[in-house]
Image (cartoon, rainbow, N blue to C red):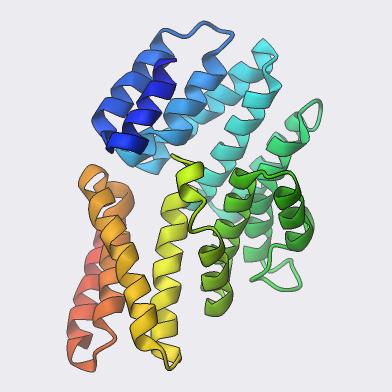
Length: 284
């Protein structure tokens, strides 16, 4: 449909404006039967490359509700998984609020959803739980709702590359937050080649950011500064491109990455502080 063509415009030609136009056209022409798919295509895979991630939340929730109404449980489940993930990473709600909403959506999904979409919800749900301190190791996605190792094995056995990407990108985020930079870098390295096979998902952006930040942390704490700085600079190039289309999702991340790059040299410490301040202002 038009939405799929829009996604191809972004993936192949990097034409964000064209992708959004065709995605919106596809949604406007959708019948009720395919509306959940159109919501997911536009708001789960396309629009956040142009607009702030927060703009995807209400439409994804609508896609979830439309899927339940029409009986398209699979796409209702996907919309819920993306909604939960994007809301968590948007930072627009308190962790405890997100956990409560996650539980309510999971209850709706467990009535008759397929297993794969449910599994896609679990990494974000476990990450939120870890951030409240209710897990044995906050840097590992193992606890109340999932076991990181087992779910990874399941994703590999079923060749579910999108699920593997979400697990590892979320795990890299947690590992960086809790100062386990080697673990963060390991998860990011293992999914470097998957991004092209799972185009559009916002986790691609998140994985790149935490890969860059963990690389700069390792550049400071290991003997192979040159290797890790080179890897960090690769992520900077991605954010330079992404920021041109969507400053609200990328400007602050780019400035933080540049600040970390500058901090590798003591003489540039003032520059790091200036960039960090600019990043904070861009984020708010």
